[in-house]
Image (cartoon, rainbow, N blue to C red; front, side):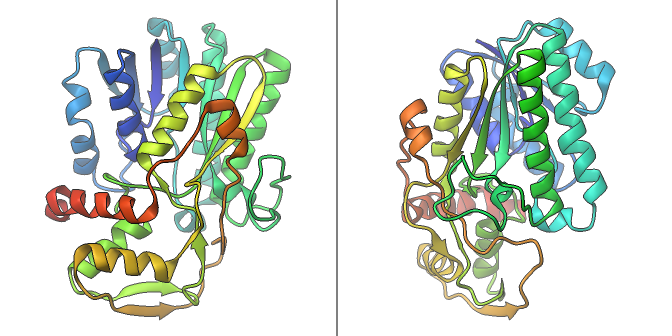
Length: 321
């Protein structure tokens, strides 16, 4: 297959591209290298990809209509995997308009370009945050998801709805993947596991917002990539949504800190702070639909995943701070 992967320099995007290239696919990647975190980290993510004969990395913005049209005109793609976008609940609180423009308008332009050039297979990276305050645990894809708690969540849900409309009126085949707190080697530096690991390693206090009882369904990046590859291979006509979660019990913040402390062999100091508006207190995925349709079967539990992350951090992450 020949695939366009947006956000290829990012955490999930670089892992996905490596998996696709390893199985013999051709990958064209588009990334704007947004300064949300250091470019050097993204360039490091791309080292193996840039060296591969079946890969091409293009620097550019999904909002650049002329560039996107040129990429599709030259591409001959079998499918689009759209991972690019502005990430993060807390940063979105201060820039709601920008999140809507990039995550909703950018997704719409990309989907329009795909349709204009005859590409009818589209995989979209969404988020567990879309479930907001309305969902009942475990979160199932059938939930209404109409009470987002942050502009980020609203932008992802809005993009889902735009894609759903294009399925009905233009015949685009869309698979939406709602990722649940993906972690592992190369995780973005501001995300909890990476930030907490760095704080423990440097003997700094860990800021815990709220009581520490908030929990997440953590998903190891290798498992998330496996689910994504299965979605790429299966996508057909119509609109599908699948949760990609960890497949086990959610982990509280306190439990997460304990796992990191043990893996690092260093004590953790906790600094309590007020809860943050926009944060969902608990997430847990119902993965039965992905299990049945995609053969999705997460293999890495939180303890093993944390051990792998810490091993990567010791070799690469700490030196890059």
